[in-house]
Length: 113
Length: 116
Image 1 (tube, chains in turn green, orange):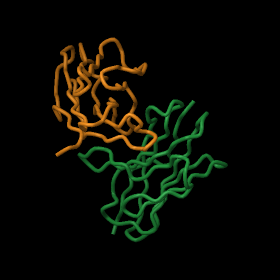
Image 2 (image 1 turned 90 degrees about the horizontal axis):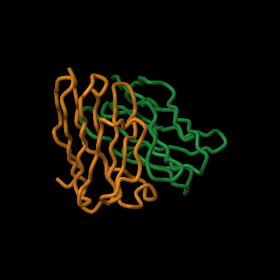
Image 3 (image 1 turned 180 degrees about the vertical axis):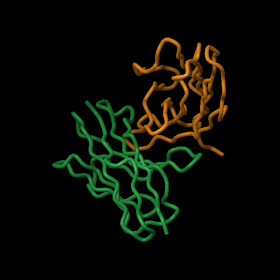
Image 4 (image 1 turned 45 degrees about the horizontal axis):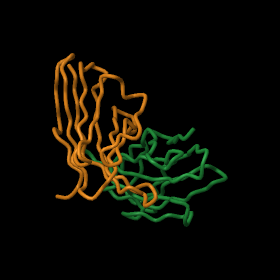
């Protein structure tokens, strides 16, 4: 069955520090993987996606993620956190028919000065 | 604004009442999705449409829930005889027919339901 596990419901980093948000997936077919961000009182926005092309995917706002099949992981990173990165981040995997997304529980990122 | 719009943004109702949410997708998008999000959880899939056809419904969509997309444009999600457990954010998203191949669902800001 398709599923996503996000390790750590809350992550706190200092401004300028590395951001690492963890996502592990389970999929019975080659997966499509996504990271979305949700700012307060806003809809989910796509950060980046993996759809079987390059395994290192670059997204908006300096974020990137690497697809590692052997580890069934798709962790999100950013070299230097900004205060504006504070938000909730969701990892998602496509279903077996590539028709819909299955989301993880989310990780809330706090950035402190 | 050409994004996905949802109405109302907030709805407070008493247990047992019926509520209806509306979603207007991006105009050229053929697929429309409904998700539900509760506090501390990620969005959970409810149902999706390809044009006017409802192609899949989640087990979460009990008999009290009904979704329609007449003429393949806007969609409505109705909840009958609301229960406190229905309190959640209801999210609508749309995509092109090959949305997941190109990789993106576009989400609205959601309709928050509070059942007293």
